[in-house]
Length: 471
Ligand SMILES: [Fe+2]
Ligand SMILES: [Fe+2]
Image (cartoon, rainbow, N blue to C red; front, side):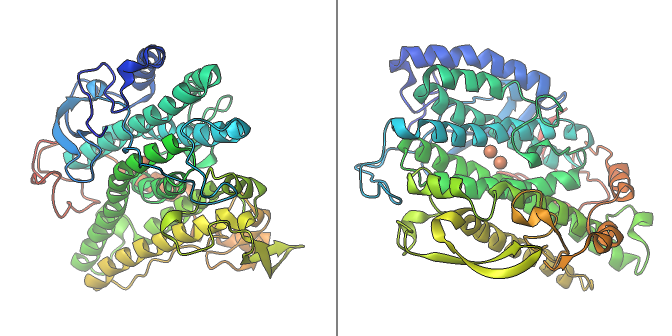
């Protein structure tokens, strides 16, 4: 069933009305979700019409419908990609057996943990971004922020459906708790570190949607391979939404860089801070911070959990099915540089234990492409500045590299060297204060703040001047 039923209170393509118990559970959760949205979602703007896209079908082409919607009226619902006939588990110890249509009893706990961890990131990011509307650099950006927010809300719905449909009472309790944890709250924080970092300026927002949403992409790619079929189908559709979030991040950072380059050209040699632009060194520091924090989201380099998840067929590699590799991953090893006794050396790790690192490899290589895109902008403008992606060992809080200090090139350094250089590598209080000082709303139609360039084109074929949000 690819058609989405919008006649229902909860739009869906899973024939919800034939499962009364589940429908009731979700309808009970719905007002709690809306209360959470009003309390912790975008501050204000809930009565404004926003030009948003809504899924009309899960087919690859033409799934979106664009129109004005007030955010609390957004049709959050449950959309899964159609079931593939006779799909088999594609990797791990159960490879070749039919994909599970129900939760395999032996894996109930790890599976619930995987789903809850993914689910928790969705409302967390909405909470992190809740104040940004007040300082949007344009109506176009304001609309993109809200699009990302409603879709993260939709992703929460996607995960809550799985919890309520397949995990009984435990699942219902988890669904409630997802609305109770709070990003950055000391007593009741979100599960993963990056999702407790404040996002109070748009440079951080663009970095988050570039680096943290891209972590999301790879987590979803690996879950899209899951032997638990409903999870795989849910994640496949979420990936189509995720692409837009990364577009917002990547082009957002590109537009900041573009504008800084323009200012440098026009006022050669002057300090960008005097001109109201963001110095490229500061952009680099924000990239360093968010990319390193997001590297942590992949977990430890050598991980028995990762091995178990893979062996059990719960979490594969990105695009596992299409890879021409041994899908059992039992015999292979992964050569890795490890930190042992305070020194780096090469070691061969059983491949299953290195699955976090395998996924991080893909992530890092995607990030490298993004950096190339930034450097094309500086080059095109004749500005002598090159962005560099910090090494995966830099500034880690999780995994073996969190136990020592590394410079952005990945060299092991001592604490003293770190202390003298950290202000050149990560945003300082002064950097943050300067960026914050630029955050003044520019909500007039067709206008844009001075620190960012307009986009190359608008949304849904509309011009930049379009009234993306009716204020
Ligand atoms: Fe998401
Ligand atoms: Fe996202």
